[in-house]
Image (cartoon, rainbow, N blue to C red; front, side, top):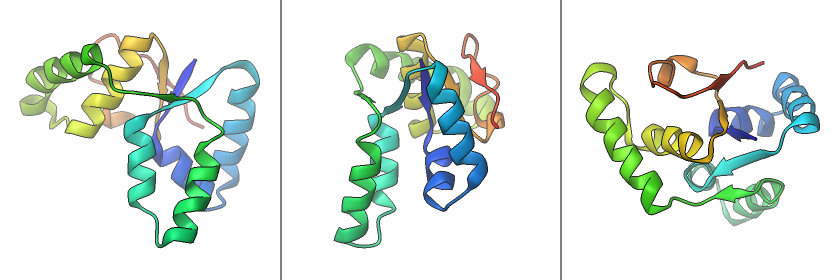
Length: 126
């Protein structure tokens, strides 16, 4: 299972062929899931109701992992450990905690945002 972060999905929605190929190839041998945080990040980027509906339709391809109490606690620990040293942000802490809690790898374009988190497996993109 691979948790796909919003920046890959945003690139795909912009017609990026590299993102499309990566999603297609990765989806052949892995279950691709998203966090509810990623879902919210994409919906916040909608321009109008029509675009919001398009985003919702696109996201329906992916199972959504909700934030559980365990994920919340782990995200809090990650903030305590990495905010001051690496400026880990709230959304990224929840994304990382989701991947860690689910035992999944994380796919993200900006590896620098996550590479310092112990135990987090990052997937090469592209």
